[in-house]
Amino acid sequence: MSQAEASRQEPQQGPGDGRPGDGGPGDGEPRGDRPGDDRPGDDRPGDDRPGDDRPGNDRPEGASPGTASPGSTSPRSTSPGPGGPGASRAGSYPRRQLGLFASELTVTFRRWRTLALLAVLAAVPVLIGIAVKLESDHGSTARDPSGNGPAFLTDITNNGLFLVFAALAATLPVFLPMAIGVIAGDSVAGEASAGTLRYLLVAPAGRTRLLLAKSVCAVAFCLAATLVVAASALAVGALLFPLGDVTTISGTQISFADGLGRAALISAVVAASLVGVAAVGLFVSTLTSSGIAAMATTVGLVITVQILDGIPQLHALQPYLFPHYWLSFADLLRAPVYWDEIVKNLGLQGLYAVVFGSAAWARFTTKDIAA
Image (cartoon, rainbow, N blue to C red; front, side, top):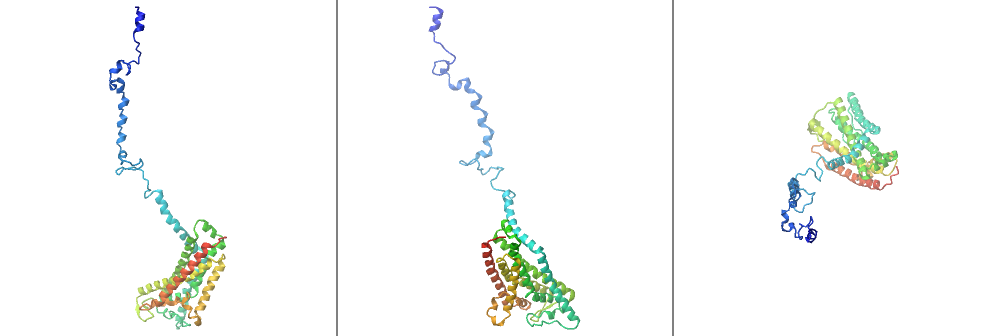
């Protein structure tokens, strides 16, 4: 046999004959003993990387990736902090709610009409004080010619603090109600006649909130007007007459400090006595789009009701008229104080505020705003 034939009879072994099953050299070697089985990738450092032991990886089983473990200190938080955007919005909401009330109060007390009314009210005690001073200089004593109401004029010359009580008694039947009627009657109708009511509602202010703001302005003017009269009377009384202990209607004496406290309480009661007029004026203001008509109607109603309160034949109706208990504030100058008619007065004013305030709300919330 030649060398070429012998080589053809031998089995041919290629480079891959060492793989398992071929009977090559690889059949007797374990798989892990092959040089390729020790390659760095099979036991790479990434399988034991430090990031797997970070605090976020020990979260409870079944927790989602976004859930922090009890001991985790993730810098992000789903709830807004005290100074976050949510807190700023929540803090600005009450300011927006109070902004309308502050704006209405500012507009009301900056109007020339309001300032003129307050100036007229402040001038009434000045005129009363000058008149009493002139009469006392001529040797005569000022008296209440009608005989009705508290006779405070006779005591002004002895104590200037009584000018506060006399001025409130003089302005309460006419001047104060007319001033309140002008402000309350023009509150809604004036906006409609000026063409600004629609824009206030589009702002958006809301009809209920706007009406409540107008009511607050009317009540604030009641208090401001009463305090202006009282402050002016106290200043004029201190300037023209002596000050000292106060002799009450019951004949007892109280200190000057106690008298000042009584004057402050009387001013608060007089301001509360005007709430009924403010409620009536606010209701009238929702019935028309003319500010002048609303003011005239309110003032006319005040005058008419006071005329009815003075007719003896209507005694059964008079306890339900809002001016019937106005002069009951004089009972605060008694010792002890008589509270019966004062409580009736405050209850009657509250009744008017509820009835006519509800009627104004029902009218204004269903009214077709055309201007």
